[in-house]
Image 1 (cartoon, rainbow, N blue to C red):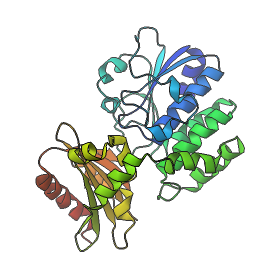
Image 2 (tube, rainbow, N blue to C red):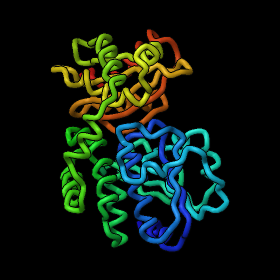
Image 3 (cartoon, rainbow, N blue to C red):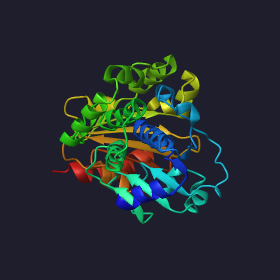
Image 4 (cartoon, rainbow, N blue to C red):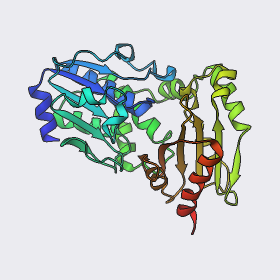
Length: 318
């Protein structure tokens, strides 16, 4: 923390980036840090390879995010947020790695420590919670813009304060952010109740694939490329789908199989209680948290499903 604060104080121009397939924690953390630096008189730019999902376009400053990586020779430091591995930022990872110092703020248990200057705490609910700690340690004001961004980060990564990472610290942080101007009702409406018709059509299609295995303890949905085409939906519209099987009584592990354009399946995993799906994702080169993780598996669906279920069987066989 001390070294990161020194870097912020002593450097002038910062690059901020996060992972592919942006979520509320990534975007909220990026934008909060962006506003912090700008309020301090610094220059800051946010670069993301993927577009901002529509339900996060309301976040203050979202329109300032760029998708073309600017020339890097003028940056004094780069922040990589909510990433356990640098490769997760996408195709420009090698170029970004050349910026020094490279600063990582993250809360994933699978973080391998890809840069020595890092603030990593797997016990934190979200990267947004860690960014709030950084801002408070700096003694900087938490403006309404920052509060909105960080509340969104904590809200979404705790599943609307439903997941096991909804710690006392997360709730206290959210409360402080409300005091600083975050609007819980308004933010929740933007995030959860502003769905385009295409997402609802895609969800209706996905629910038709709902399948249960392992005596009803595992439930999964499947979204194929043809489903996107026929419903005119986007990949971002699958956000939240993985929670549907988990809402069924008796299901302890929930899975969403999403076929990507290159034929690889993105596998999103959620679990209840102490069932550690991070172990499952790690077996395929992925990672995440105990109750929320993801990975990618190549092959046809039948083979991908078989391999995944073998790994899931190892964590529920008790």
